[in-house]
Image (cartoon, rainbow, N blue to C red; front, side, top):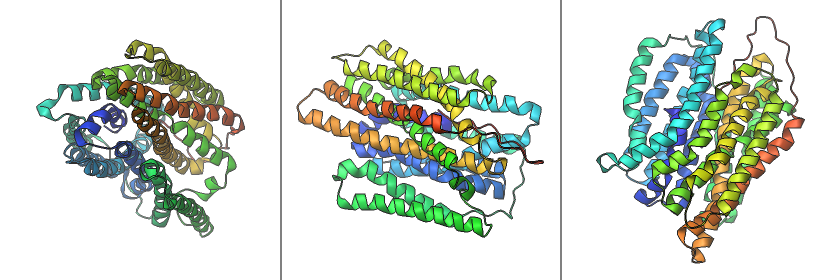
Length: 468
C-alpha cells in the first residue's frame, strides 16, 4: 500500500486540483506533506518498534495507514486532504521500518537473500502498478467518486493485511529498556519543517522577509540538534542520529548525495502529470501509461542488480546518475519541441532510459554510503539515509514547484494557450533534475568506500532496499 501510494497520487493531481479547487501551492503540499511526515517519522518509529516490538508496531502502522487512507478518500476539502496526507505519511513511517527489521530477525541466513530480493521486486512492481492502477480507478469514476478511490482502495487491503499479519507474522519481542530521543525528534522536526515550508509557500506568499527568517530558524535548530546529539553521546544516552555518524565527513557527504539524488524523481512526475493531463487533456490512465516506461526500467534493473552484491558500488551510482542526466535531457528536449498535440510514444525511450538509471543508481547509493559505517551504527545509518531520502523528495517538490508554477503563471499572463503555457513551464522545471543528477556524478568520486572490520559477535548490516 505504501509503495503504490507513492506513485499513484501523481496521476491524480490534476483531478484533485479541479475537483477540490486547489491552487498550485496546495497541490504541492499533497505530495510534500506525505513525504515530509514520512521522513520525520522514520527514525522515531523505527526506534519505537525496537522498544514495543516490531510486529506490534507494524500492525499498528498498517491499521493507522488504512484509517488515514479512508480519511484521505473522504476529505471534504483540499485542506483536510493535506492534513490526512500528513497522518498517512506518519502511519507509513510507523509500518515501513519494521518490514526489513522483521525479515532480518525472522529468516535464517540461507533465506535472507531471497527475502530481501522479493522485497525489492515488490518495490519495482509497485512503481509499475501505481500509475496504471491510479489511471484505471480515476477513469472508471466509481459511484462518481472521481479521484477518491485511489485512497479508498487501501481499506479492504489494509483490513486483510492486519488480519493476516496478526496470524502469520511471528512476534518479535520488544526491548522496554531502550529509550527514544524525544527532544531530538522535536528539534529535527522543527528544523525540517522550518526549511521546507518556505520553499513550498514562498511563491504564493511573495517571499516576505519572515519566510527567510523561518529558514534561518530552521538552520539554527539543525545546529541545536547536532549539539544535543553530541551531548547525549557524551553522557552515553540513546541518540536519534548517532553522533559518531554526524562527525563522520564521509557519511555526511553520503547524506548530501542521497538528498540531492532523491530530490529529482517525485517532482519530475508531478510536472509530467500536470503537463499531460492539464496541458494536453490526457486522461489519468493515458498519463499513467505514458509514465510507465520509467517504472519498467526500475523494475528491469531490480530483477538482476542484486547479483552484483557489493561490486562496483560507486561506478553503479555514478553511471546511474549519468544515465538519468542523459534520459532527462532527452525528455526536456522533447518537451521543448511539443506542438499542439503529444505523441506519447516519444516519451517512451527517455523515460525508460531514466528508469534504468534510477534503478542502477539507487542500487549503489545506500550501499556506497553505508560501506564505511561501522556495523554497530548500521541501523541508525540506514534509517537516517531513508529519512534524508524523503526530505530530499520534499525539497525537490518545493523547488521544482516554484519554477514550474511561476513559469506557468507567466505563460497564462502572456495569453498563451494552456498546452503552450504548460510546455513552456515544464521544460525549465525539468532542468532542475538534470542539474541535481549531474551534481551527483561530480560528487561521487569524493565518496570513500571503506570496508569496516567486522567485530566478533556483531552481525553484518542488512541489505537496504529503497523504494524508487
